[in-house]
Amino acid sequence: MKKYLSEFFGTLFLVLLACGSAVLAGPSIGGLGIGLCFGLVLVCLCYCIGNISGCHVNPAVSFAMLLSGKLSGKDFVGYVVSQLAGAAVGAALLYWFWCIGGEGFAFGGTTAISGNYLATNVCQPGVSQGMALLSEILLTMFFVLIILGATDEKKGFGNFAGLAIGLGLGLVNIVGIPVDNCSVNPARSFGPALFSPNAWPDFWIMVVGPLVGAALAVVIWKLVAGCNCAKKEA
Image (cartoon, rainbow, N blue to C red; front, side, top):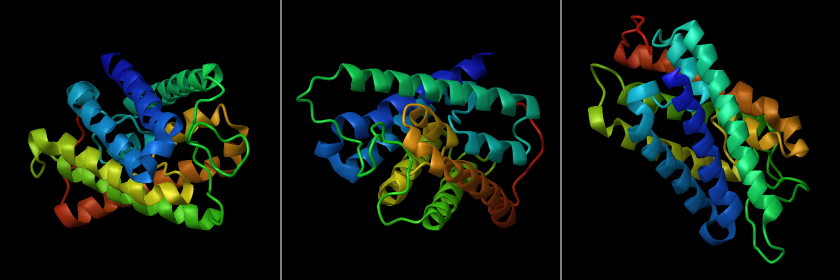
């Protein structure tokens, strides 16, 4: 239960603070600042709950751990449910900010698409769904590959793993925000979408892309590092 609670609260704060950086401070910090906020939040979470649940806070990461034999099927289901629930609560708190904000407050996190006000993952103007899907696959593949390498028992980097993982998330967000606000995390997309109906036509991209990218990352890691996939308790 501690693992599931950690994933719940970790994903809650990821959505509240990282997406909140776009919603509450987007105009002042821009895409670079938002990407850095995503990375910094994950760095903090890694060192906070990493020793409890592994700090997945992302169904795609949990899927990669399942495929690698590092997470049981039961825990995978528990992790994903906890992550989705945490993302929903985090988005609800962010939506609350939106609802009670003053009329003169310059909210960020908006796009040209009407009704998108929680930094939801949608194809930006001029971006096709195919382009967004490819972006999600490639960026998630890179991000999950970092996680697999940094946390590997024999080849990992110990206490520096959280720093590498957070920097990786920041980097992919800086690259991916102009495409679709960058997901690489189905839970991060799910929470804000609950309060933004216009996000649902593109939501499938934010599920399929990260899961495919995570699976490819596992294959690549096994090929280049001879990943030990002996099953263990997460």
